[in-house]
Length: 265
Image (cartoon, rainbow, N blue to C red):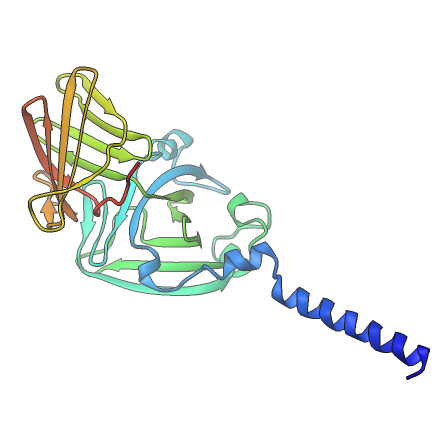
C-alpha cells in the first residue's frame, strides 16, 4: 500500500473512532432526561415543598405561597395525601412532553421558570380523584428528574424534592417524629420537649417486618417501633403506610408514619 493510501486509511479510522466515542458519551442533560418516566411508580414516595416560583399572574400572594414551604405530598401505590386532604380512588395519566409545549400550556416564555432551563423534556403526570376532585396542589406534577418535580397550582409553581427520611405523627397530645441521616428528633409541642439523638442502628422488631430504633441522649431514652401495617390519622382519617409507637422515658405515643425507613448509620 502506498504512503498516501496508508495515511488516508489512518485518517478514516481515527474519524470513525471519534464518531463512535461521541455516540457512547451522550451529554449529561440527555442522561438526566432518560430518567423521566410516564409511569405512576415514578411518583411514589414522599415529596417536600422546597421552593416557590411565581413566573406570572398568581391567585396567591407571595406570603400565601411561602406558607406552603415544608409541606409534604405523600404518594403511595394506592392513594395521594397532602395534610388533611387525601384520595384513595385515583386515575393517572402520564406523558413525556417537549419542554416548549409545557411552557406554552402555562403561558411561559423561555427564561420565565428557572427549573426548566436547559431541559428538553418534562414528564407530566395528572392525578384525578374520582371521589369529587382534588382540592389542592398535586393534581398535576411536572417531573424533572427522579428526585425533583414542579406542582403548578393557582398560578404558582411549587418546587418539590423527594424526601428519603421518615416522618410520623400522632395526636392526644400532638407529636411528630423525624428520622433522617442526621438522626432522630421527637417533638411534643404540648410539653415543649424536643429530644434529638444520633441515628442508631435499627434492629428487627418482634412483629414481622417491624423495625426498632432506640437511643439515649441528654438524659432521655427514646425507643421507636415502626410496623408495616396500614394506619389512619385519628383526626383527618388520612392514610399512612405504617403504625408507629414511640416511648420517651416511659411515656408512650402512638400514631402513623410513612413508608418503612431504610436509613442506617
